[in-house]
Every structure is written in C-alpha cells, then in structure tokens.
Length: 88
Image (cartoon, rainbow, N blue to C red; front, side):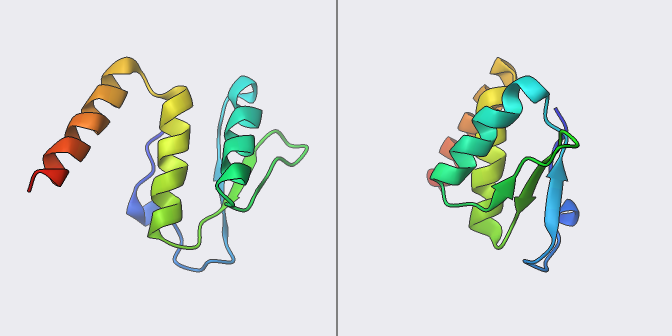
C-alpha cells in the first residue's frame, strides 16, 4: 500500500489528491468517504479523487484506506501508535 505523508497533501483545499486504489476496493472507500462527508469522485480513468481540506480529513482518509487495504501488521502498528499517543 502506498503511504500518504504530509508532503503529498496539498495545502490548497481546491486541489484534489489522486489515490491509486485497486478497482475492487475503490467503491467501498468512495462510499465510506461519502458517509464521512469528504468530497470524492471516481472518474472513468479508474482513479479515486479525494479533496483534502484539513488535517482531520487527511486522517479520516488514511484511516478509511488502511481499514480496507492495510495488512494485519500495519493495522496493529497503527492501533499501537494511537494507544501510545493517547497515554501521554
């Protein structure tokens, strides 16, 4: 899975981020982003375009993608980082 980092997210909220998501997972991610009220689209070229307006949306997008595409190990590491952060 391709990791998203802060340098890949444009600060201009009008710029879309194009995520390369396997076609089999694209619609599930798209519908979850719609539920979260995050503007996204699935154009005919097979990509998933997501508008990132703020850091919270970036975190929600990453979490949504990770839930469907992350390996068990990646999900476990993410959860442990969250727990460690909350215990500070």
